[in-house]
Length: 47
Image 1 (cartoon, rainbow, N blue to C red):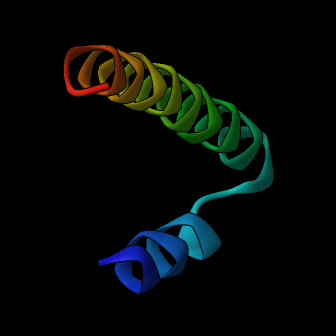
Image 2: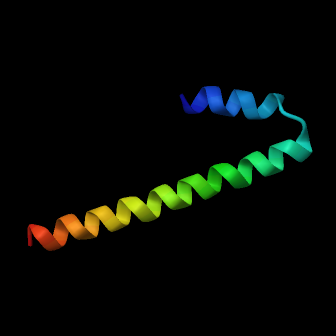
């Protein structure tokens, strides 16, 4: 899955590549925040 994404990124021209990288990091950041949020809720519930 990740390998396919990386292969797709390599084929894209450089100026588009920069935008795609920032978009991917944005998604990872949002996903990470959501994950931490869920984890903290879960920990509070089952402390």
